[in-house]
Image (tube, rainbow, N blue to C red):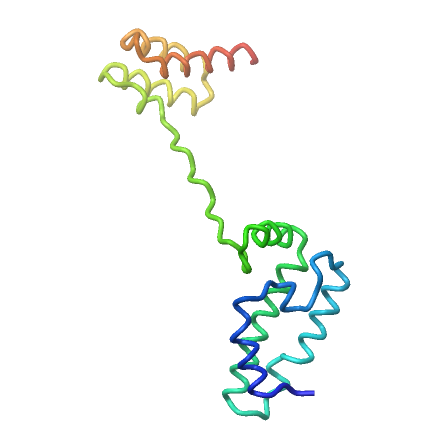
Length: 169
């Protein structure tokens, strides 16, 4: 049974107020099998191929509706996405919330931490030694950097990390 143009227009007018569960006519506790079955029934009504002999507008409307059903199925059929969606739904969002990843922390190099010219020079040497896996040489270079900057707590902390790494080796 095909859907009328008027029914499509009503459906599209209300779709922004519907959750994915409402779109597929499911309760929130629906099982994976129920989700699959509901999507199948949804597809029987709204798949654009059913309207291939109708007007261009009918095909466009069917496509718009079908896209939302596919979106709902894609989210609800994957446990990880469904869990995230349920959290967003509890916060009042009917569509998944685009969560931006937290900003990456700025990694301060030893050279960035050092403030004096001599301190930066020794810190750069220490970084090179660390990258080459030569921790004892890195320790010596960092000790020299700390001697030029005795009040630089962050530089001293990095030196403690090297001592810890050496004690484990």
